[in-house]
Image (cartoon, rainbow over all chains, first blue to last red; front, side, top):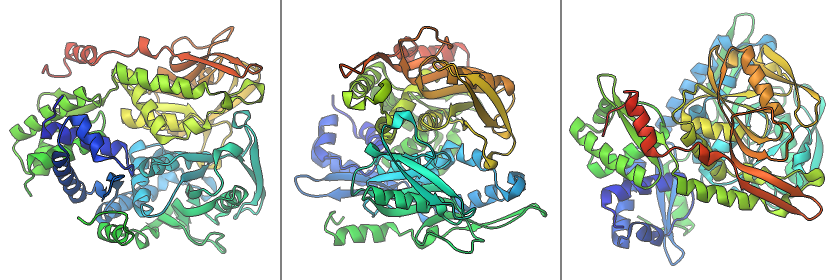
Length: 292
Length: 292
């Protein structure tokens, strides 16, 4: 069946959005719509322009016999600033205060739209790194890990506090919790991670970084290595941070239980967010994509 | 800035896909693209046709002053059959067998594309029910719950086995595990669920149904009620099932550890999947949408 341009644009947009970072040969689209490759190329130019203009992302064109087009999710600085500013406001709501100065965040982490947007933000900042898998620890980091992984088109592995019969044989490590200095255990199913994988660690909250440090030690057991560390909230008032390089969306600068005040500032996210032009230039320098 | 039709179609497609089941006034689009409402209406007709033809879903038009358009995610029977058939094949792989006849499913549940597709399937079958929130129990059901919730545009609440300081005050119940007959505990943060909510329960696996039954009891504590129960895998060889109405994608009919054979059949999903025509007719009968 032949498709008109208008229908092709709608369907291709959906197809590309559903397959982020996956190389799609122009032949796939040409066959799908029974259309000439030249028409498909024109469609892709329109989609690319609209994606970039509307802050949806960009399309990368790869030339040659194995070439095609790839949708790269990307959030621009203005949109990211707006989102993080809303997030700060939400987190600073004093109703979140729990005994002991803890914060209730289950409503934010329970909102699929917010979680999805956090995934887009992290995918944008890690878009030029080689990542094979996203890792998190049960329970609260799980939705964030999946949101990021979906935009990066990689699987998720989940570290647990206790071993379950449905995991098969596991690797177990002990680590020191950064703030309470207690010895804790985490386990990971042996078959869930391949040797030599590049792993993006994602978690909801980082204080001293003990749990994340535990995940880093776990990666060593699998001869895997850290491709990046992303946390939604970092707590500031820490004597000694166990983790050096991480990217946070927001920073908890002060929690005053008595005055019922929560101070939240921007995390270090924007020190890492490149512009679309920079990403395109890097890709071009590497010779992996065509110049437009 | 004025948009051409081709750019509008790309951006509107993305916008609608990012906001499933949300009513968008035509004015929003008219303003966004500085275009006449009549042009927007024509665009929406093209998008609706393409969505239905390509199995992406449909658009519902609501008339009147508070009217607009809504994207309803929907998977057609052919696509659902194909997906479930692939899933059956994957689950029947004897490499999954663990001691005790348990199955390793972490790779399937760790694949965001598969998880997302499961979400679409459940959203299609529950699209005509009133659902306020999706509930699951930690850990393995979490990604599935978020995938469904994103397509239904509702939040997720997570029941836990143990209470955490970051949950605030919780409601705790005891329940009897269906297969082992042991007494177990589950807890839910008090502020995570509103009274009277209609709740869709989602989990990865159901044997006798003890855990799901526990979640049903938990809902009673909140004066909330069950809007539906969806499980990815149901095990068949059960003397007494504690749950009557549920929708499963696949059914484990036999696990033979000695012969290393896993038999997997279709779940009861297709007894519940309506056609797009049936859904449209129901909506029309209720007077909530316009006839095309």
